[in-house]
Each structure stands twice: as C-alpha cells, then as structure tokens.
Amino acid sequence: MINREDMLELTRRMTPARTSITRAAGCYVDGDREYDGSFNTNFLNLSGAEKTKNLKLAKAVPFSDTNKNLKKYEFLPESQKPGSMWQLLMAMKECGLKNDALMDTFYEVVMERYQADSEYAILVFHDRYDIPAKALDKERLWESEEVYEYLICVICPLAEEYEPGEPECGFLFPAFTDRSGDLNHVNVFQKNLCRPHMELVERILWVH
Image (cartoon, rainbow, N blue to C red; front, top):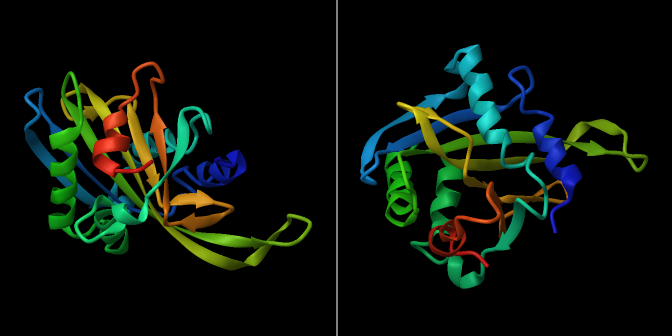
C-alpha cells in the first residue's frame, strides 16, 4: 500500500519556487506510432510558464488517488536482470537523463508496446529530493537523512501539435516508501480505471 502522506510530501515541492527537478526529456509519437521528434533540457532553463506546465504534468502521478489511481507494483528478481527495464530505468536515473542513447532505448520500448488511439508524448522528469530528517514529534530537522533520486514518467495524448494534454498513465521510480527510495517497487498511475493501460505494467515495466 502507498502512504498518502509520502506522496503529498513530494507534491508539496512541485511548484516553480520549490522544485528541485533537474531535467526534463521527452519524445513525440505520431498517429502511425512513429517517432516524431524529441527534446532533452535542463529544467532550470525552461521559462516560468513552461516550468509550471511541466510540473502540473509530473504532479499528476504522485497527486493522484493513492491505492486507486496510483498503485505499487514489484520488480521481481527475474525482472531486474541485465537488459531489463529495471536496469534501464536505473541507468536513466543515475545519469540524470543526460544519456540520449538510453532515452532513445526507453522511448523505443514504450512506442513498441504502448496502445494509443492518437498522437501522444512520452515525458520523463528527473529529481533529487534532499529528504529532511524528522524528530520523534514529527517536526522537521535541518539535517538530511537521504537524497531520494527518482524519475517521473507520464504518457499524454497531444491536445495540439507538440502540446501534451492530461496524462493517461505514468509512473514514479523508484517508489517512495516510508519516506525513502524503494528500488524494488514502482508506483504506477492510471487516469482511467475503466480502461487502464495495463501494457505499461505487464509489457513495458514488467512488474507484478
């Protein structure tokens, strides 16, 4: 189960003034499921309006209804072998999305297996959260307990040309469990529970 307070701790920081997101990358896919361009940029270089727009997209994942629209899934040991999606996500996280070859590999896997009725965008954000320690009375202390380095991915239909609409699905990796990074789990978001994109769970992430 996902602790709602853990997710709210992340979302409270998702404002232009407080965010520590370092990088945003993405790729566009046309109606024929073909690659239609990509970008990879330092988040600080975005305009204020672009930061606000992208933070809203990223925030859709942790701010969604926990244990309903946002569920925790496990990477089994056999899903963490060399060549696995888990290994790819770990490499993307560790390079802070700066390796374009890794990003292209990720986009290719998603494009091959994602089921879409129209044009869409795959967006990935990288963040480092310096988790403040808490005293026994829950008051925040100045010192840090851990740096939680993570990715948020959202897949969005295009509302206009190269303009992402509301995310249809996405994920937070590694999961944020008990205010700590959980490398064996991922939190997966589904906007429409009547028509979830289970291919994200079963054929892209390979989680259970």
